[in-house]
Amino acid sequence: MHRHDVTRRELLKRAAQLGGSAAAAWAFPPAIEGAFAFAQQTPSAANTLAATRAQMAATAIQQTALTNMMAMFSGPGGNVVVRNGEEGKVVVDTFV
Image (cartoon, rainbow, N blue to C red):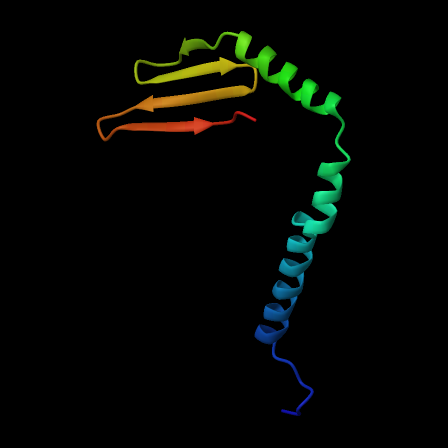
C-alpha cells in the first residue's frame, strides 16, 4: 500500500468525524452569536412566552384508558402513553 492510500475504515472514520463536526457547528453556534441574539430579544418575546405558558397551563390534561394496563394522557403539547406492568411503569412521552 502506498502512503496516500486510505482504507475504507479510515475513510468512513474521517467522514463521520467531518459530519459530526459540521452537525455540532450547526447545532451549537458560537457563544458570541448566542449572546448577541439574546441581547436583541425584545420584551414582547418574553410576554409572548409567558402568555403561551399560561395558555398551556390553563388547558386540562385528559386521561383515556386504552387497555386495563395502558392509559393515554392528552394535553396541549402532545400525548403521553403509560403502561402499568408488573415490573413497573413505562412512559412514552411525545410532549413538546
